[in-house]
Amino acid sequence: MPEYRNARIILNEEISSGIYKIVVEAQAGDKVKPGQFFMLKCWDAEPVLWRPISISEVDEGSVTFLCAKTGRGTEKLVSLKSGQEIQLLGPLGNGFDTEKLGGRIALVCGGIGIAPMVELSKRLSGFKPDLYAGFRNEGYAVDEIKKYAGNIYISTEDGSTGHKGYVTEIFDASDYDAVLCCGPEVMMEKVLRHCREKGKKVYVSMEKHMACGVGACLVCTCRTKDGNRRTCKDGPVFDGDELVLD
Ligand SMILES: Cc1cc2nc3c(=O)[nH]c(=O)nc-3n(C[C@H](O)[C@H](O)[C@H](O)COP(=O)(O)OP(=O)(O)OC[C@H]3O[C@@H](n4cnc5c(N)ncnc54)[C@H](O)[C@@H]3O)c2cc1C
Ligand code: FES
Image (cartoon, rainbow, N blue to C red; front, side, top):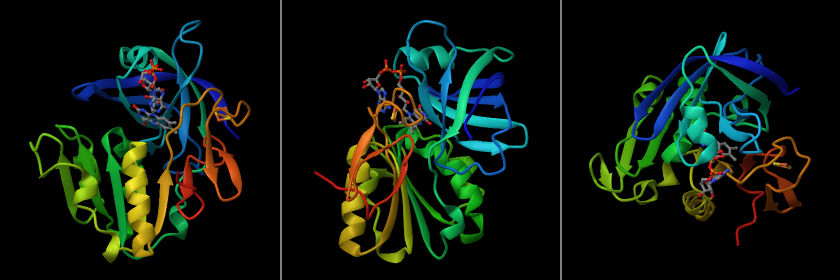
């Protein structure tokens, strides 16, 4: 059951330009899965809505988030200091079902989509999953994932690290039994189409605008073979076979 609570900030530091690592004192529960998220808030009136942020790592007594400063809500979240309080609702949604996975696994992500890959790589460390991560320029969180992963492939749009261009240009699903993907919609769509062409199993974490985060308002729907589904409640992680692309 998602739980509402206030949690103390243990650490909030900028790990790359505009990207913050926020560690809060909280128990996420035994059953938490990578790919699940919390709704976060640290304000009373404005903005009205809570903001969905993925669980990046869980530990006994702490939850780590990676937060990109993009607008009004995230600006407030990243300006919190250690010792201050934040409001949490979660864990929410359906994450990656790591217990059902095995064999050769690829983790494919773009930008802040790397956030859930930290806990995901930790849970899948027995399989040494390969990481394909794309960034605009400077990368982040890759060192944490290195501890658990096999090969690491990086792309940057400015060519400062790894391949110059997009991560989809260096990713080939041919060698993998399963592909787990999180990032901008356009990237995920390319990965999904590519995996379908190659006949590979793919799971994607969908990113939609959210309001309630708990399945009540229907603003976050995405199209599946069974009709519209709520990204916050039925996802955000979906089996790629279920999703309908435009
Ligand atoms: C399931 C889920 C998990 C997420 N995990 C993370 C995470 O781990 N770290 C992180 O930094 N962000 C994550 N996001 C995105 C994050 O929720 C949005 O960036 C945030 O809500 C923007 O709020 P804001 O008030 O700062 O920006 P706003 O002022 O509301 O908007 C600023 C810009 O961000 C865009 N935006 C707003 N909401 C979203 C959204 N849901 N998806 C994409 N763009 C959006 C707006 O269109 C606008 O261009 C996640 C989103 C979802 C749905
Ligand atoms: S955000 Fe309200 S139903 Fe998903």
